[in-house]
Image 1: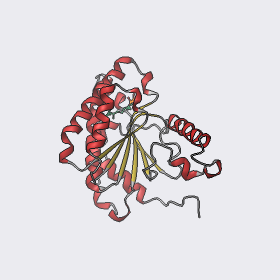
Image 2: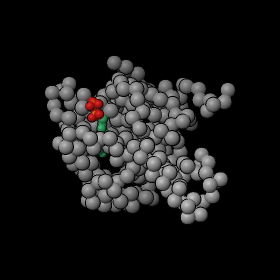
Image 3: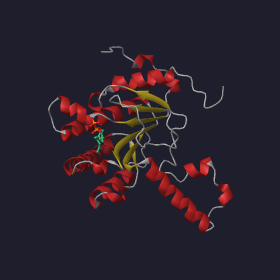
Image 4: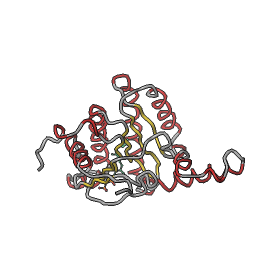
Length: 244
Ligand code: FPP
């Protein structure tokens, strides 16, 4: 157990502007407790609420969380249904709580694959929180980086064919502006829980210079102090962005 209080050690003038999280380990957490995987996802959604609050009160500008990937549809139907139910409940809770907090919600990914009802809730939350000035919470839903890039390439080619853009104007920043994350700065810090050291098709374009932080903690156990610890470690790294 690491009992340090990391919050007091943080340099408040150099916080990461954007933290991305791969919330992994819900299933294993539940298995350890001889519970269903859905039980683990429910605990995962509590952990998400906790971390959103902590990031917002710390003053983090952007938090992007991987809640449902383009590959997650291949899980057993029962688990997909449980995740959809949880998503629906999470959105309902947010619709209720939104007046009491300052969090602005934005969904990235292709939401056209979700039920109409879920799509409507997502649109409503985005609309209701549009003017909020606290944490920008980006929830990745039916998100996969390759899918995002494929959609972007199609849009770019269409715009070239329709002479909306010139072939020679295609560069890094133009490509970024066609991605779901167009209005979000690239992540400074990416956290993955549960001991896995993979990127799993998350923000591949955006993490070119991101610092990675891996922890063995399973997502439902990840708490405020774990977030502060990750930021503390990030603040003690040297970032050179390809220079010397
Ligand atoms: C990874 O754990 C987690 C997910 C696939 C989903 C993340 C979802 C949440 C944190 C719940 C809250 C989200 C919503 C829908 C708003 P895993 O199932 O891959 O765990 P395992 O690797 O131990 O099996």
